[in-house]
Amino acid sequence: MKRRPLPLNALRAFEVAGRLESFTKASHELNVTQGAVSRQVQHLEDVLGRKLFDRHHRSLKLTRAGRNLLLGLTPAFDAIEQAVSKVEDRADDTQLRVLAPLTFSMRWIVPRLGRFQMEHPDLQVQLGTYHDDKAPVDFNETDIAIRFADDQDEQLVHEFLTGERLLPVCHPDLAKQLKTPSDLADVTLLHCSAQREDWRIWLAETGIKGVDPERGPVFATLDMAMEAAASGFGVVISDPAMIGEYVVTNRLIVPFDLPVDSPYAYSLCYPDGRLERRKVRAFRNWLMAEIRLETERRKLAADMHQNQQNT
Image (tube, rainbow, N blue to C red; front, side, top):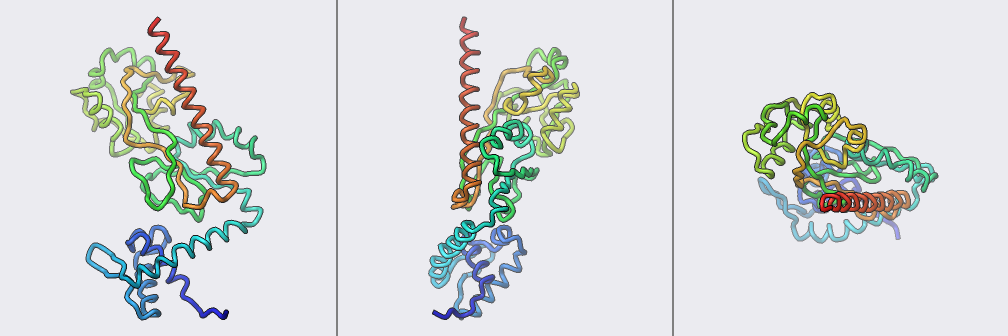
């Protein structure tokens, strides 16, 4: 059957905008401007002679014709994605592109990455990092990502990895000055984000009064803040899972064992169907196994600690 020429760019723009019901969200997924998405959709409407969206001031709704078209286009584009994935050239099939938060990469993935490489010597990991947790991930350039957030992107598959526990940590010499949690009012508080969320959450949940969570210097990353704390500069809020080497070398200790569960969590995220790629499935399965081992190790350590206290 002879196929007529179709405006594929316009169809793609419409499919994303219709699926997300937003030109703005579609522009993020397609890495183009909102105006470009709007023009492509308008072009498609002109070609078809049908109105596909009802445009309102703050909302975008599909018309009946738009819904019918979207029902056919979404599985068609999914099929195209799967077909392209199956014929990736061999060179690309061995390059595994992983994106993760900087601290999680340095404190969690890198120390264990050798084990993954031993299990999959044919795969070459390209580990990238990011600082902005709200920035969308370009899955044309990334195979799989680790996200740190208090919500989920509905357009992606999310698999929970681990939650975050918040505890104050500092140099042992500084810890000697801290007899009670209220003594934190007299030392420097260190922050790894301009929002100073960690200290606000921890102080609120523990009910500690008289400590101003807004004071103290801000660092670009948690690693920088922890290094400052290890030098004796002040106290930082951190997750015990991220400070292993500091604890082993006695550069950081926990002055008050008052853990608080953060609303944030780490999750593995990827587009639906991405696990059909062998390299992505291999990394996902390896990481999940490592998470289970670490969870079991922590539980065993906690049980041993509890038993020691009871005896």
